Length: 422
Length: 167
Image (cartoon, rainbow over all chains, first blue to last red; front, top):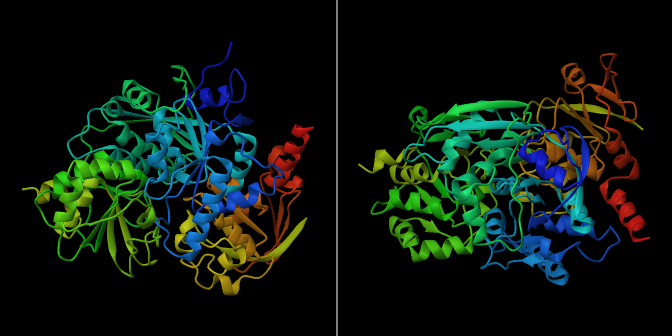
């Protein structure tokens, strides 16, 4: 009789041919999907070539996504993109060219490549985003990914699971971003180190897939190995429209053992802001200093989806970005871009005086398209605000949800939607 | 294998943007990356570090991105090993995979200051602080990690697996 398991343990057990696994065990797991991007793929390809094999284990389960420094920002980035493109095409692997691609972690679920019940490994720390689908998805380095591309499996330690239960319904202007910033503020940037985070509760049921992806996306910011949510009707509705192959729904056992359980009543939760320079410096917006700002970035694998842009546009419609502020809006994929275009959202942003750009991860990591100068402050819908994350080491990043970011762009200082929509 | 060098000491949550900022991620040459290692939190590091030196830090070293450029540039800078109270898990895997030894040892971190001279025996996990005349014992590696390291890293280990699978 297999023992009771958490969601992460069930998925891992199913991928190593076992009835059950326990936290701490080292196991070799079969992987359903492997991804890398233009920053991490060149190193992975270099290591892959040392392995003595010619082909990836299954070209329809290996993806290369141009996302970070695209459209190519300089010659070196262009060379990296070229290495990845040539390898991907020669392997017949999953590949989306610039102009059809998107931020990797928005594109892959939206195109049905990653699915409930999967084990997914990616050469990008925000691979944990896909956990919102009820899969075990985790980030690794290029060498790990090179080996997984060749063998279709990978070693991992079965993580203990920490359960997070969210009670109550979220208020207006409060979404997945605020819930996860609040959580990271509570447990700290290593509060879930080496652990799987399992999110559940009434508040999540009301979030669409987009808000759920936002939460799982930031599991890594608490040190988590994965951030999982058991599939429900919302998940399955999303998956049915896109799935490229069959999937399996796993649910955690009611009597599974968790390393810890955190319960929160989020019905009174305000929009949250993580002050510089740690995602764990989370405070309610009402307690955040109303600092003047130089830039706003709306986009990224955390908050660059259609629902995010709708929220930002709702705040911006008919208003103008403050004279002292640059507001950069980056729809996170070509699909999001097209939808936002058709809905008139891009027009709202452009009318308001935003710089609306083609899809890229660029600004989030200080790559390009929105790099900060010394002393500048940015309100960003992305996931990290370490010193120097978006540019000069003495620039500051305030993490917030898209409505707060849009309101701040209009106010010229950190502000909430209700302060500018009067 | 015995390592020997002086300590560069850091605090908690040294993130991958601090180890190697993203503005250099279009560089793949480890020696080129090493010129910018720790640049944003310790601008003198690249000029100060000597072959064999040891980075000592408190908790969650290497948090943030999955960039393998982080352990690669530390290794290429000449650092022989990192001792911390804990490591972020992706950094931990990356370091082992590329052959940069890392050790977890609370006492050694607390009992070591910047500039101290250390001698580290990787097989036994013994850490000797030659400046202070003290000795510490790091957590032993799980057997599988030792197997990986003895094979010369994950690529060589996997190459061996693939070759035996093909037979």
